[in-house]
Image (cartoon, rainbow, N blue to C red):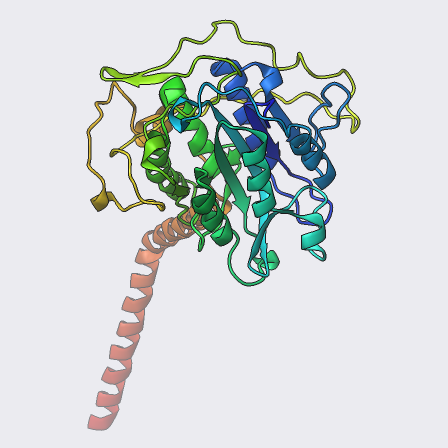
Length: 402
């Protein structure tokens, strides 16, 4: 990883597991933001997906062997600007795909991961974190948007060991959901809910984002997205092993770039080059798997943000946070953004309710019309019947008198 400021892995079509919808799109969207909006050279953002192009004739297909080749090939210490964590660059490792726990050991499942041989085909989180630490002296941020498939769980939920290892190794960690929750996707977003919230945070803070900012934004926004898209509540789990790193600027930057510093006037970042390197420059023309270049995606506008940075390892409740207000000019609310920038969508069951309600209303209207139209006839019939009854009673009385 020493040669890359970010490694982004996203998997859709697993060989032995049920496909995911947006793992690949998640990794592509993150890479696109870093290259096109954060001006990170494309050669320093490694993308490993189902269809990513080879780089300098080296495959990027995210199977176990390829992932380890890229990690092992970087087992040399990268340039650092000092030995103190406060003066080191930040490097990111992002994974969107399946995560499992087997015999109390957490594994990330590459595209060829086999549920019948998890230890032999998966990538243990312990070995991964160890490799990331050994390949760079920089600060490492690990972001895992892991899908916990109920059919793959064998004991403790995936993530428990990962949290312990991150604390033990001093590695900041962001998990897409709490240990008792599942990660969800939304077709309307074109991404997983977690990655959509992550991209919103990055676009809002841009180069000025700190770990505390990311922590608070995700804790606020991800549950909002869950509710809006009719998904079970999803809350991120974030490990901040040391208070030293909370207020550092964490956006990955190019090797040998000056370290952005925070001043008394606020967070000031080193200006980045205005010119963005073309995302395709380092790719060869024909990938081994016949893939095409990652497509561009629409930005996900930011939404409301509340509170300051939290210090706990897991997200705190709103009562644990010091609230700060943002004016509407600073950031539109989620309802405002949704009303202005999204097309209303109805789920099939909502459409069914509307259809059934319309049919029932139509039947009631028809019944009322028939009732009103035939009321005189019905009343006339009732009158005739009463007259017949009276004549019969009158005839009986006369016969009785006779």
